[in-house]
Length: 67
Ligand code: F3S
Image (tube, rainbow, N blue to C red; front, side, top):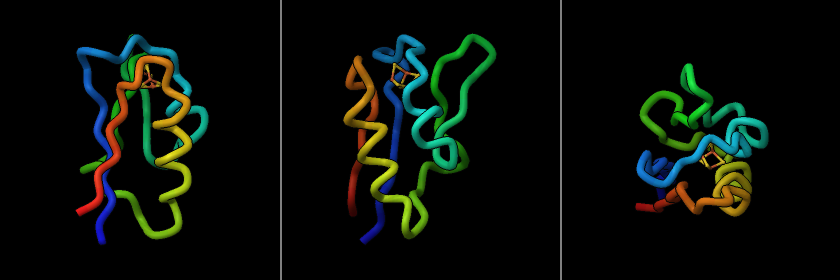
């Protein structure tokens, strides 16, 4: 099972919870909007961080999918 994170740029308002809570998965752009590091694939052991970030985004801009 592969977990992947995405940020919907239409929804992100730059609250920064994602990169504060899960800096291994998310970064920020020049204006403080969240970005997904690399291809968004969540390495083993970081699944909890991915879910935590998604649950704490006030705009519900983070999508976590499992394939
Ligand atoms: Fe944006 Fe949500 Fe992160 S609003 S900066 S995706 S916490």
